[in-house]
Length: 172
View 1 (tube, rainbow, N blue to C red):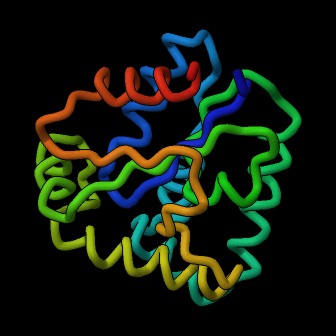
View 2 (tube, rainbow, N blue to C red):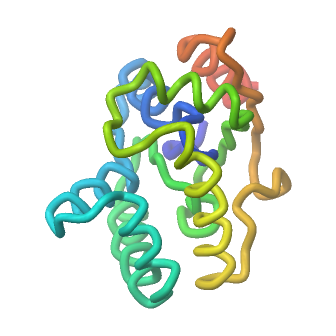
């Protein structure tokens, strides 16, 4: 079994929730680029959307963040990595994409504690990520062919069920 698993997906697909649960069950460390970016944006006194816009406008900032994060992750083993571009930058990992509709993502956000995000920011952020990664790397992270496993997420499936699907696929 691979000792690193990357989780990618659109806004509110459950990457962090699933990642933490998966890490707990495997005894791995959970690490999230999104959490690091949120903290960085907060420290700079701007919203996550504003920070993302800054990265889109300046691909070098994006590339610097990716280099630092990927270097950190590639030096370690036994990681669950919440990272949209993990398939591109993380070596020897099992790459998972959590696919969710905007409607289901909106419902998930309503239940979460992300004060700076709402159903209005979902399409804005998803489109911004696509543009950001296209500008920086000429890549579409939503292409399913980048991943070892694609899990369709809806509000009927629990995080534990998602973890079970991933674990089943990894072990087979």
